[in-house]
Amino acid sequence: MIVSHLLCHWRCYRRRDTLPGSLLRAARSLRVLYYLREHAAMCRLAVVREHIARAAPHEVFHHLTHRGYLVRGLTARRRVQCALFHYRFDDTTFDTVWKHAVYRAGGLRLWQREANGSTFFIRLEMAVRHDAEGDLTIAMVADDKVLHRLSFSWIDGAAFGLADSVATLPSPLPLPFIARNQGRWIDSDAAFAAFELAFPNNSASYFCFAALQGVAKALGMDRVLAVNSTAHIAWSAAVAHHFANAYDQFWTVLGGVAHDASCFAITLPFHVKPLALMPSRHRKRAALRRANWQAIGDSAGAAIARHLLAAPAPVPAPQVDTRVAMGA
Image (cartoon, rainbow, N blue to C red; front, side):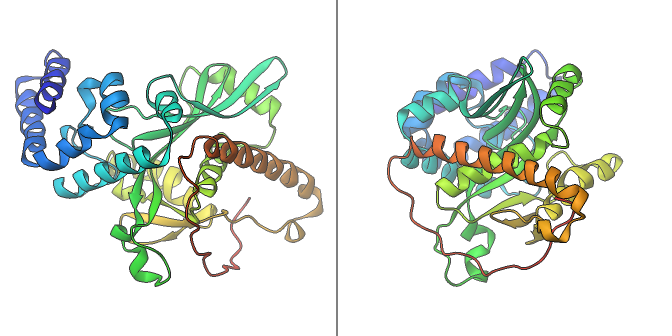
């Protein structure tokens, strides 16, 4: 099975790669065989065997067959460990209906709203495999156009040093690791205008994060990790300012703090400025924004809870943080 998936991967890319590119791809792919035991275990998981391998047989091992995975600088061994942790968590946490919807049937609806003749929804789906910026995506969709994507994988927070810093946290510590925060596509102008009309003074990025927060809450998780801009696998100096705005600045607004050189830690629920500290003319607008976020989070949590194989173990609450985040 492993070799057949590798052959499928090579056949898929052979026409688009140059000769040097083909040789480099082959070299990356052969690392899969070096970790044969781990990948054999991964392929035995139902979520991989019955869903991912059928939906994307040429990208089963995208954590090694592409240049990067999740965060810059991960060794091949760490990539394998992270991928195996993600799929094991999926396999033991969610039912077959969830796995089929997310990985094979176009996504699981987490929230939906009709307004002004337009349809808006948020879905959880398999991430685009050739980017390797997370294995799952939360997508905000307006009139069938994607306005924003938040891609992530389940990682062991203990392996990223969280359990060492807070003695009460368990190990392993499943958490979402956000590796992609990407907005507007060039063909989404009309859909974006419809979104602004239906939800004035709102942001599709906040809608996606509110949905992820609802998912995490349903799983008993109290924080997420989010990639630092310079640790993003697509970062380059030429677009450093763009990445800093899309990643570091957004995580900071949510109350995130730098955990290490690779990521921010964002405690849930994400921080918002108390309404009492806002100018009175802005309070109603802010209250409406937060009502939308709350509705999205509640809907997403309920959608996930219906597909859990067992009740999640509660995670100890973090220490109270009284900092005030910007803008929200």
